[in-house]
Length: 219
Image (cartoon, rainbow, N blue to C red):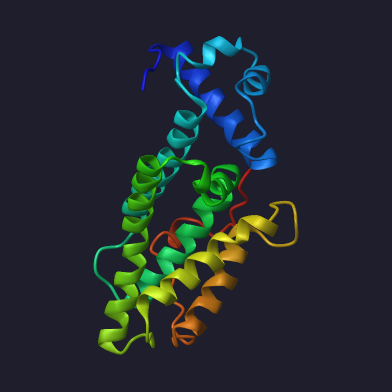
C-alpha cells in the first residue's frame, strides 16, 4: 500500500484515518464517499489515492491498525505470571480503556467486517482471533486450577468480549462515571460471571495513578 513519506504526508495520512473512522462510524462504510472524506480532510479527492488505492484498502487499513494496536497495547499491559484472576482483571481493565479511547475505530471494526472482501476479512479475523485467544487461555487456566468456574472457555470469552466492547455504545466521558469507574464495575460483573466475585485483584498499573482517567472523545 503506497504511502507518502515525510512529516506532511504522515500528518495527512493520520488526518485521513481519523476522518474516515469518524465518518464511517457515523454514516456507515457504504454511505461515505472518497469525495466526502477528502472534503472532511481538506484535500483534493485524487490526493486520497496516493495513500489508499481504493476505499476498501482504507477500511482494511483502519481495521488492521486497530487490531494490531490492540494486540501491542495488551502485550505492554499484561503481567507475567500471577493468578488467573489477576490476569483477567488486567484484561478487562485494558480492554475497556483501549476501546473507549478509540470509540470510532472500535465501531468501524465491529460493524464493517461485512464490507471486506474474503481475503481481507480472513486477515482481520485472524488478528481478532489471536487477541481473543489470550482471554480464552486465561479462562482455561483459571478453570484448570479451580480459581475460576468456567464450563466453556470459548463461549465465556465471547460473552465477556461482547459485554466489555459494548461499553462504547453508551459511555460518554462527561457523564457521572469515569472510564476507570466503569471498568471496575464491569470487572465486578465479569468476576461474578466466572465464579470469582470475591477475587478483585488490583492491576499492577493502578499503583501509578489514583485519579480516575477520563479519555477524550475521538474527533
